[in-house]
Every structure is written in structure tokens, then in C-alpha cells.
Length: 349
Image (tube, rainbow, N blue to C red; front, top):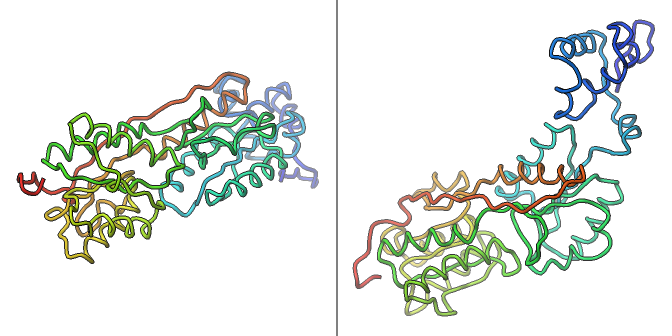
């Protein structure tokens, strides 16, 4: 809501411009323009004078009027499976921070990875006349993103990719899985397994592929029963790990494709009387804050979660401006901790 002058009238851009002897368009660009344009609208001294007088008079921009002038609402819609998950929440923080810096607002909705809900939420966001979408719940087949609705609005995928060439900002998950495999191989583990997550999500699929490809190259291909799909949560990880670790030919090392599933696997190992880092090596993915604070700190692949969100916004703003946007994969980092223990002997490996 705008500030008011001494007589109760709203303070206007025209009034500020008249007091300073400037054109109203200059004042408007300094006070209401996108962040990247404000610095070019006037010299530093002039911009300072404009902002000081606006603060003194209590001027506040009117977002509705601005959107009418620009035919844009400066609004970005964001879709995620579950905002309660720490990885998703951290990516969204990056999205919100970057959008705010560029003068955009965001609103987010959960889809629970249900394609029907995804379609409904996309339709709802388009109905609110968003300028663009950031989609963090893409499935590999891309079916939800096909068709006329999304042909009318720019969008960028984040965290997950599809099997098509849609612009996506992701971690290099194949490389991340490969890093874990290299670590296990260096420790001497030959019997290994993967808690692979949901098969429709590129995060789980790519991390699993990176890991299994490296073991195949080492002449140690994983049998099918040592790759278990499950939900990306502690319950799914516990169930998958129980199945893997109860097998007569149990693995000596397990890679869980996210930290929540890895924490579930820790519970399964405890229930079976296995000592983490001694009887079993375990690695997770994302390096969430909890990983380093567990009783046995968890080896995990660190993904640049907040940066994914920030870069996705930058890519989207390029599309909104009419430029092209390419995909980008950010490099992960393996953080080794006590959960993967020391090198194993031949009998264990």
C-alpha cells in the first residue's frame, strides 16, 4: 500500500519526480523497476536522492498498478513433491531468494508426485497468470509436461530432469553415484547394493546408474536383487535395507540415493545387529545437515541444493525475457565420514 502525503493523499511517483526535478519515468525505474535495471536508471547520487525522498514521504509501490503497466504480475509458480522435505525446502529457499532479488514473488504448491495432482496444480498456477514456472517434480517420461497448457508459459525444471530436452538445472547425479562407487571400490567392497528410490525420478535413476556403471566397469556388475526401489523417505529406506541385509549373501556396503533413505537403512542395520562403519558401510546423498550429526556420521554426496534453485530462477528469467535457456548440471562433492569405515579384508569384500 502506498504512503500518504500530509493531506492524506497517497504519495505518487509524479510528486517525488516534481520535488527532485526529474522525469517520472526515471523515478519509476529506480523505485519499481527490476533489480537488474534499477542501477542503470540513474546515477548513483540521483538514485540515492530518489530513495531517500521516497522513504521520507513514506512512498510504497503499488504492485497491482505495476503489473497493469507492464502486463506482468512478476509472479513465479513453483511445484515440488513435498515442501516438508529438507532437500526441497533448501532448493525453494534458493528459488525465493533469487526471485526476490529480481523483483519477483513466488508461490509454491505440493503435488505429492501424483501426475493428476501435478496437472491440476499447473492449471491452477496458469489461472493465476504466473509469468513462469519452476517445476521440481518432473517424472522421467515427461508426460505431465506435454501438451498445450505449458506451451503458453516459460518453465524450467529443477533438481529433476526428463528424458527429453526440456531446460533443467540439476546436480550431476550420475557423477555423484559414480563417486560413491569409487569410494566403495577403494575400500575393497565387492558385494554392494543400492537403495534406488523411485524409478520415475531422474535423481534416483541417475545416481543408481552412475554407481552401477562404475561397478560394471570394474567387472563387478550388480545382480538385480541388489538394487531395491523405494520411496524417498526413512520408511522406504528401512524396508529396502531390511530386505537387502537379510539376504544370505548380504552386501558389505550399501548406497542409498538420498539421506532420508540412508537414515532408514541405519535403523534396519541396528535392528539386525549390524555395526555401521564396521559390519556395514553406508553412504547417502545430498549431505543434509543431519548427516554429520548422526551417532555415526554419514558419508554423503553433497549436492548444491540452494544453488539449484537460484540458477533455475536465472534460467527462467532469461526465458521470460525472450532469450533461450539451456540445461545446467552442477558438480557434486563426496563427503566421507565414519559410516563407511575403513578398508575391508578380502573375506568381507
